[in-house]
Length: 452
Ligand SMILES: O=C([O-])C(=O)C[C@H](O)[C@@H](O)C(=O)[O-]
Ligand SMILES: [Mg+2]
Image (cartoon, rainbow, N blue to C red; front, side, top):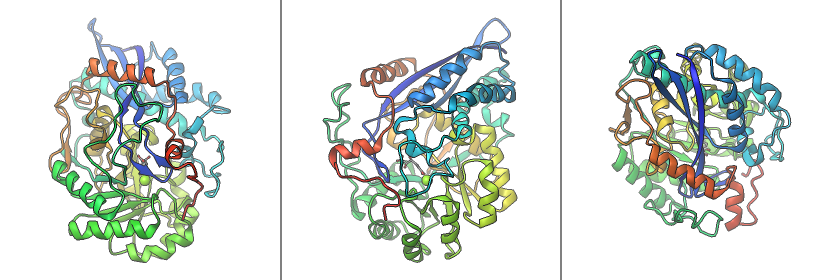
């Protein structure tokens, strides 16, 4: 059961123009597919799959790790984690994160919220966990295939057969504006079937389509795009259309403390929870102290080190786990125990992803007893282009049944992988940069936080 090879294939898949506090999603998401080839001890081999963001620095780090993996036992993920940590710690200082910096403010407790400087202080442990996570998922997929059991069994066994997800609503343009440097590479993704959502009516129309198609029983609106009163109007319109759906709003810390305090009263009866209205534990605690509305986060609690201060200050009541950020599926399941111990609720965060990650997220959530909120997923926005063979993943009444079969239960569609990899090569882009893309259309766009 020895690792023979690590293959990392960067891909680019189509994404609609979804707006957020940093800007707007580019026409293609960059992602990396990880294949871990493992000897099966009987003269054959199995291939474990993993998936992570496709930033250039992350690909470099995976390549470095990949060169040292052959010879390791696929079962010794603890040893693998130490090796990865040791190998990459020296690489964290001075790394060029490019425009990935906005993401990294999640991990950067020394970065003042009003600063969006080009180079936040590196937080190596956060980045190392992001690299290790994809490897751990691939190891567990391979282990499951070798043992003939699904990954959920390796995580302690299932407490649910299907995992509830929330419908993730975004303000969006009708289509990509074109002339973005990616048009024509493989056909401009152009106008999409979802249409524009820039008003309360547009958001409701999007929600109706989401709920009709996938059966979601709760809804999340990505905020931080328009002034809070406009986003609150959209939530009121959603409440009128969906009287029983729990609603969430996530401005990604685009509000100042003062703004949050002035609008939180209006949200108290409208929302299930308010996600990251402001940046950092201190400001979250100030807001939390003045409202009955539960605050949730995937920004100010991203590691175990963040738990103590957040508990001490009463900053949040719900944490959104994410195996890509917490360092794998086992760490995410363990987060569920921490949440239970400190009295927090647990939900799940997502970012644009493919079916490998949806399968991984579903196995982890199926094994986590304390998960008490529907998980986020971007999958409905990206399902049209996937690297897994269709059929293993489906939404039934807003939930994804744990995939059947061994390991993750998804298999690679090699032709699709090759196609999306060829597109990645043609695009020649190395980073995600939502801000630069929005500036093509709105040159004066200023991403300084807090915006309101
Ligand atoms: O819950 C969150 O903070 C997210 O989902 C972060 C993502 O990057 C989201 O803002 C997006 O896809 O634009
Ligand atoms: Mg969030």
